[in-house]
Length: 350
Image (tube, rainbow, N blue to C red; front, side, top):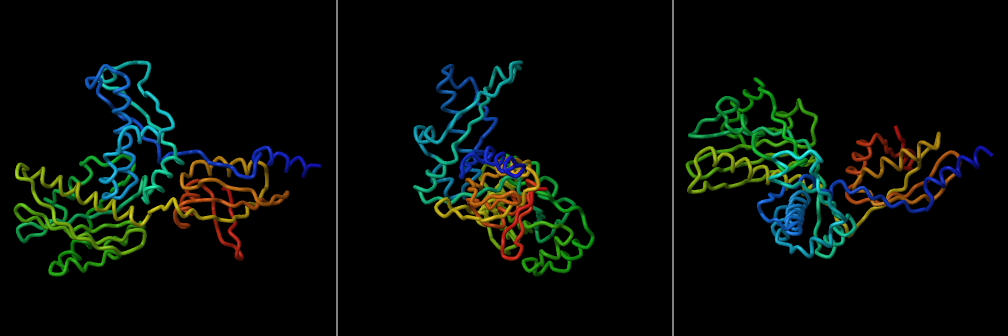
């Protein structure tokens, strides 16, 4: 009798075989500020918010070339992708609230997926990605490692796209000063695994920045998601820029390049979803409730299907987008362990 009640409770939780997940965190764009000076017409303010929200969304998700291709998408097309929006100002109106109006815009995941699918676009989820970066400045045939290195001292002072990449610059290290000093003639060959050995990160970037009058030659020696990737950039100084403005432009261009490198290793093709068969041990009804709640927080998982169930375990098929390693890490973030045991994926809710 207890077993029947137990299974009955599970069936109530999962009243149908397919449980569609609806949390769209990466497709939400919050805190869009629109100046009231633009118009007194509420519809025009909302339309402006939709345009800015879409621009922020595709800037976050798409490679730079694809972003430029679709940054001029018309308003009517954008409106079709939106589920709903909120006007975010509080009841207590401040001076800033009188000048600006805030919007939160929620894009529909399925509609955005169809938009990408129809246009053969791959997108990437890199929210809150940590990157260890060291910028080395060479100017007038002299290297500046830590002291008098504008890039090292000011890298995180430039505005970054919200929630995308968190840059961490290594602390001053005598060993690394020696490594750079010994490799001045062949800085391009420096061993980044050794240089960043104190940091346990999948994403590290050694940026060699050589500034010559009105141009900067940049060599990026990177390890992204465990893969070694090298890239060169040539950045020209605008005629009306002073030195600080030029340096800020260099930081911005390098940030764009690093962001694209990371996106390139995390691309998601909506045309080719994958499926994962897992076994979940059930010690209590709460296990499955908690599993369901946590799975809803993972944007790359579309849904899951209960295939078999008894008092001890549930066999579930999970439909997801992206690479298996990415899903394993996403599950781990939600305190769900996924392991291969004797040829069977087994899942444990911690």
